[in-house]
Image (cartoon, rainbow, N blue to C red; front, side, top):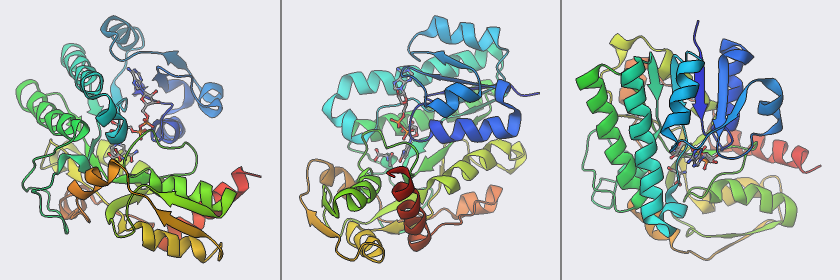
Length: 315
Ligand code: NAD
Ligand code: AKB
């Protein structure tokens, strides 16, 4: 019987992953936590505790009191916001991970999921079909914290036997909860503005290609890597994963299939430099081979669902 703790349940991923975990393990077996209030569906379907992950004592209390066996640690400050507040973002991203890793070691947690990002790559990384193993010299606070985090989770696996599992998520696209301050956020914002105003001003240039994944594929990959038999995981840093790759121009063309008079303008801001330092596309063959990564959504299929669901949501 698993008892699962989700840290960061109110965010873009947590708001969907928590509900999926509750479907699998039962509502009362998944304790949702965040520093912010939870979405209604999470509050109504099972337990929620307010938790600042930097509060080690409270974290320990919940884990011990609830006999937690698995943690999904999702709380972090994303790339765009982290560039605005470098030191406090480093503190949140790194100290939270160290708190969780130490606790996992002490209580002999069964499994820990912590997400990394394509932000671990930098301007010296080969940008096309970026391999699992390559040059990694990130030049953003967020990317440096993710690369350091990857090294730490592998270290805790090797030195202390903590069963750490991780994915290098690309930009995630979803319609339930809006993204939390990253560089790939444009690919969600564009749908809301297209439906509401028939126009969008992109903060990335028209030809900025980035790897992306639709949320249902990301949730499936997360659960698959956590359920995979340990013997199948050839690495304990983090797996490259990506469902698709596209530019703002390509996405706008898809949206025009549904909203023909949609207009896009380009006004790149500070996030352009971040996007320019990240891969255009990702080679995720190691994840495919080790634990069978698959993805169901390409750009046209994802766009169709986004238009339909956001139109419904906005009444
Ligand atoms: P998000 O910003 O939407 O959600 C993060 C959540 O963490 C928020 O609800 C926030 O309130 C919470 N949080 C922040 N500080 C906290 C603290 N001190 N204590 C407790 N909770 C705190 O982020 P997300 O998109 O859901 O991302 C989740 C994880 O996945 C992060 O580690 C992120 O780096 C990683 N990731 C996300 C993407 C993406 O495109 N969404 C891509 C790559 C990696
Ligand atoms: C961001 O843009 O910061 C995130 C990520 C790719 O890690 N979406």
